[in-house]
Amino acid sequence: MGGILVAGILLVIGIIFGSRNERRHFDRIEQAEEELSDIKIFNIKTLPDNLEKGGALVTGNVVIAVDYFKVFIAGFIMLFGGRMSAYEKMMERARREALVRMQREAKKIGADAIYNTRIEFSAVGQRPNKIGGAELLAYGTAVRFS
Image 1: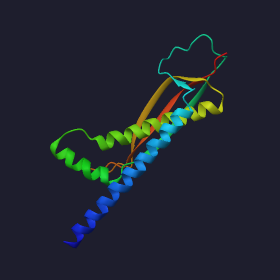
Image 2: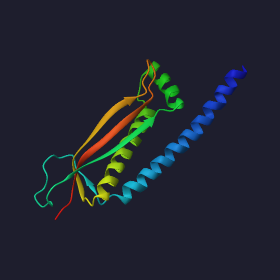
Image 3: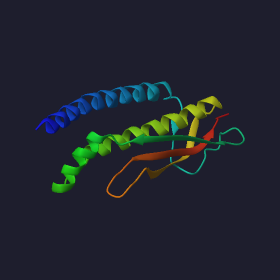
Image 4: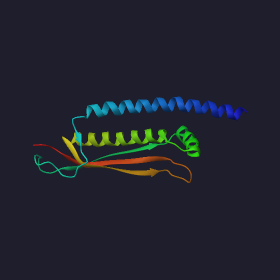
């Protein structure tokens, strides 16, 4: 009985602190997105004609881990089926963070926009029946308008 109580307490603590950390991360991402909103991101391959000569590859990489609470909840969802919103939020955070990091790199070189933006995904730390986390790499061609 004592072990179940300890596990329950740890689960509640994980939910509270995990949710708080996730919300803080989303807040930091939103602030960064606002600060970098002058650097536009496009997924089209064709570059406009009014660019300065050349362009540069910029990247943004992030690795985000799955917390035990998400794994616990996902286990129940997999039994009954349905959306795995905890994983969806994790992937959204990773995607947005990778794009922000790519925009920061573009800003450092004085770019106005990023074209041909792509996002690559890779699972990290996978073991049988366990998901460790996700790596997302955002990359594109940073350009400056004349």
